[in-house]
Amino acid sequence: MKKLFIFFNFFSAAVTAFFTVLQLKRLLLCLPILLLLLLLAGVDCKAQSTVQLAQPVLKYPSLFFKTFVAVEMKFEQAGTQIHYTLNNQTPTTQNKVYTHPIKIKKSFTTLKAIVSGDSFLSSEIVSATFIKEGFKIKLVQQTPANERFNGTGLNTLIDNKGGIADMNSKTWLGYQQDSVEINITLEKKQKLTAVLINCLQDQGSWVFLPAKLQLFYFDENKGTFELLGEQLPDHNKQVSAISCQPILLTASKKIKAQKIKIILKGIKTLPAWHAGNGQPGWLFVDEIKVY
Amino acid sequence: MQRRTFIKNSTIAAAGLMYQPSMAFREDPLLGQGNKRYRLDTKWSHADVARNPVNDCHEMVQDSKGRIILLTNETKNNVLIYDKTGKLLTTWGSEYPGAHGLTLFNENGTEVLFICDNNRHQVIKTTLEGRVLLVLDYPKETGEYTKAEEYVPTETAITANGDIYVADGYGKDFIIRYDSKGRYISHFGGRGNEPKHLLNAHGVCVDNRDPLRTCLVVTSRQQNAFKRYTFEGVYIDTIPLPGAWVCRPVIKGDYLYAAVLQSNSNLWKQSGFITILDKNFKVVSNLGGSEPTYVDHKLDEMYQTIKYFDYPHDVCVDDEENLYVAQWNSGKVYPYKLSPVI
Image 1 (cartoon, rainbow over the protein chains, first blue to last red):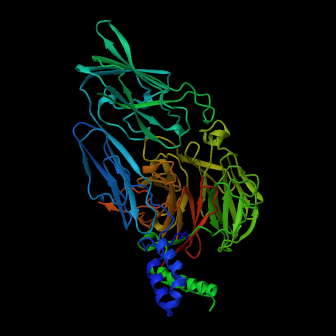
Image 2 (cartoon, helix red, strand yellow):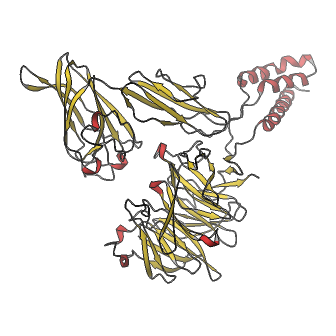
Image 3 (cartoon, chains in turn cyan, green):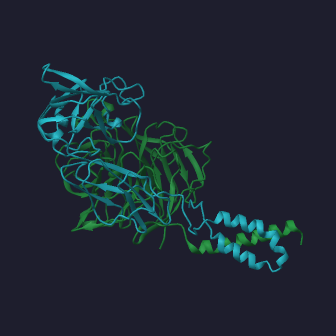
C-alpha cells in the first residue's frame, strides 16, 4: 500500500526517549535530537495515505436563476466531510462543513468545495459560479442551431436553464458554422454595462470556444448597430477538461439601449494538434444575460 | 559510552518507540463496503518495464493452471502471463496493435483465447501459446457494414456449445453471433432509441448463475447500464448503473464485477472505480467509489470517491477471490491486485 507519509507521534516518542536517558549529564547531548524531533512533530499524529479523495459532486438545476438556486453536494464515503466557501476563498478543513442544500440568492456567487478525511489527502477544489438574471428580455432571435443540438425552443438562450457541461444536455444550441448572430430586445431601454454568454468547451467532442465575440448596440439616432465590446478567447489552446465558460463582454462606453446584437465567430477549422485537424469545429451556447 | 554511539542508540530507541504505536494506531484504508472489502497492492507486477513494457492494459483472465493472462496494445508483448504472485512467466504476441478484448474458453478440455483487435477490425482465436486458430473479419453477412473500418470489436463471450458473441463496442454497437466454426448466425442490439438498443456496447458475458434464467449480459457504457438478452438476442431488461461508465461484466461465483472507466460527474479526469453487484444485480460495493445507496429500489448516482484508480478497464477474479485491475490510459501502469479482507 502507498502509505508513505506517516506523521508519527514525535512528541510522545521524544518524551519517552528522554526519560529512558537516566543520566542527567546526557541530557545536553540529546537536546539537539529532541529539538529536531519537536520541530518535525508539528501537532498532528495522523497516519496519512498519499491517496487523494475525489472532488465532491455538485448537483444543481442550472447555473442561472431568477430569485435563488438550491445547490446540493454529494459524497458517499464514510469518514469524510465536505467543506465549502461562498466568498471566493480557497476552502480548507477550517471552513464550514456541508450538511444540507445551500440556497444561493446573490448573483455571481462562487461555490468552492473540497472533501477531507482522516486517512487521505484532501480533494482538489470543485467550483461553480451561479448567475442571476439580468435585465428583462422581451425577445431573442438567433441563427437557427444545428438540428441535432437545437435546445428546447426559441427561448433556449434566456430560459435560465444551463451550465451543464454535457453537450447532449438539451440546454445547448450547437452550431457548425463560421458566424452566429443573436439579436436581443430588452423590455425597456437600459444603461448597459455587460453581456454574459455561456459557452461550452469540450474539445474531445470538437466543441471549441468562440474565436471572437462582438457586442453591438442599436443607436436610434444613427439607425445603425455600433460596436460596444469585443472578446478574443484563447480558443485554440489545448484543454482536456470539459467545462462551461461564461464569457463577459463589457461595454466600452456608457450608453442606453434597448436593442443589442451579439456576433460569435466559431473556430473555422480544428487546429493541427487536434484529431479532427482541418475539419470544421462546433460552437455551443446555452444562455445569455444582459446587465 | 562515546558520544557518537550514544546519539546513534538513542535515535534508534526513539525510532523504535515511534514506530510501534503508529502501526497499531492506524492501518491502510480498505477499499469497498460491506462484505466486499479489499486491500490494494499497486506493486503486484514484478515485470521489468525496460524489457516488458505495457501500454493500455485492457483485459485479464485466469487459466486453469492459475496463471493470470494480461492483454495490452503494446506490440513488444501483447500478452503477458503472470503467476498469482506477480512474477512474469512468459510473454508473446506482436501483431495485435489494437488488442482490446480477451476471453478464455475451455473447448473440450483445451483452453483457447479470443482477442478483439480494434485496429485490425478482427477477432482472433488463439491457443494459450499464441498460435492462431481462427480469424473473424468484419461481419458483412449482417448487411450492416460496408467496410472493415466500421467494425471495431471490443469483446467476446462464448457459450457452452461454442457459439461466439462479439460486441462491436466501438463500431456500430451490434452483438454478432457466430457458431463455433465462426459462421454467422444472427445479430442484435445496434444503436437507436429503444431499450433494446445499445450505446458503446463495450462488453458481453454469459450469466449462468441462475440455471433457469441463463442469459447474456451486455454493457451499454455511455448509457451507464447493463442490458440482458436471451441467447437469441431478445432484449430482457436493463440494469441502470447511474453515473458509471461500466466496462465488461465479469461473473465469478455469485457476484458480478466490473471496472468503471470513469464517473459521469467528472468526465475524462481519471475518475474510475470498481463496482460489484450481487446475483440480483444489486450494487453491494464500490472500490474507490461511493457507497451504493438505493432509495425506493432505485440506485443513486455513483461516482469515484478515492483516487485509487485512473481509468480502470477490466477486473479479473482469480480462484482465491483476489481481483486484478487492468487500466487504460493510466501512465502505462501494470495491473494492481486486490486481496479480499474477510
